[in-house]
Image (tube, rainbow, N blue to C red):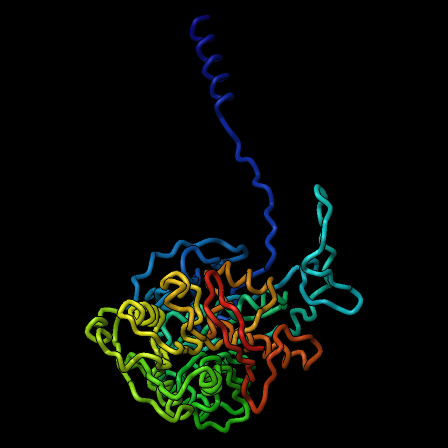
Amino acid sequence: MRFWTTVVILVAFLTGCTTTQSTPQPYKPSTYNVASAQKGNQKSTVTYPGSEGAAPTITGKVIQQQQQPKATPQQESATPYAETTISSTTLAMATPTPSTGVEATPTTPTQPEASEEKEGTLSVASPMPKPLNDDSTMIKVAVLIPQKTIKKYAISTVNSVMSYLLYKNYYFDLNVFNSGDEREASIVQALNEIKAGGYRYIIAPVTNEGAIVIANNVRDTLVFIPTLNKSAVSITNANIVFGGIDYDKQIALLAEKANEKVGTFEDGSALSSQLNTLVRQHNSRVFYEKRVENSKANFKGMFKGNGSLNNASFYLNTPIVTSSLIASQLRANDIQAYALLSSQINYNPLLLTLTQYEDRNRLYIANSIQRAPSGLEEINAMFGHDIVYDWVNYSTSIGADFVCSNFFEGRVARAFKEPMIDNQVAYHTSLYQAGRNEFIRVTP
């Protein structure tokens, strides 16, 4: 009996030692109170497919990381596009923390970005002012995306809008409406859903076809189209503002660096055809036009022994990989160009990697992207894309800036300096040369 009593006591003791109680997890505060909203006719999704890599994905009440599969390279695009379908859904309703606002007020002086600190001391950031709006004055922004048409920009433009709203620390309701394509029925259905949701502002990265449908069906909502320049479409709707860069202005500026002997390279795309037309308008003598549809072209047969190409100015109206090959193959085949000229399409640091300095020392590139606030650039980088070299994302950020300025009726300072003239963003364009490690501005 004494033996069994001892065994029972020992078992009870060991059981008590090995039993663990659930320890309460420490509270992890989130910067943004994100809530799902209006079910209505919108499909509810748990996560939003971010851009490349592990982009921040807003779910529930915390910001989490979601791993995305690597995309298959599409032809020569420097940024591969992942075929990820975006469901029309309320992306986020964010409530910022008052102590983390970004808007500066006259009573709170801002500190210069670069300040000299003594070695070994810590720099403490001063408290930020409260947000300028609250739940009762939430900014409601709809992003209309025809994903099948604009492909990779369906994701990056949404992230650009969100980055700006987070940077400004506004209370906002951001909703994505994926029309799929740009057929009239698809666009109209998305516009009806936007109207039913009470959204006053629309950012729509569409092509000419989609812009015409929007212009014919929007009367009382402000629409910003970041992908088109006003000169490219015949639209007179006063509610539509365009953010596309001015290729005509860029080609005209590049023409100042060309001589009278001009040649062009293009790849058969709509954009390259447009650029070729502009080149002919700004240059009196275009003696050579060559289509290079991909990087596997026979450049040796194209250039070898073709002395007529010497001392000519060539417009590279081709994607960055093809442009890099053309520049290198011209030199490899002993053709001395007077100048190599390119518009915004080749303003990309990848060009510095794909070419040798001797291949590009006579290359001039027109660029209309200015420096954005560093904080905004950093938030965009967190989403896996940039607004430093990608003009569509940059234009989309300007659109978000314009929309918020309109919402606050001009009571807040804009983050971008580009003015709006006759419903079009007026860009300042400069010429750059591709140096050894960076792009160097050569015109003001």
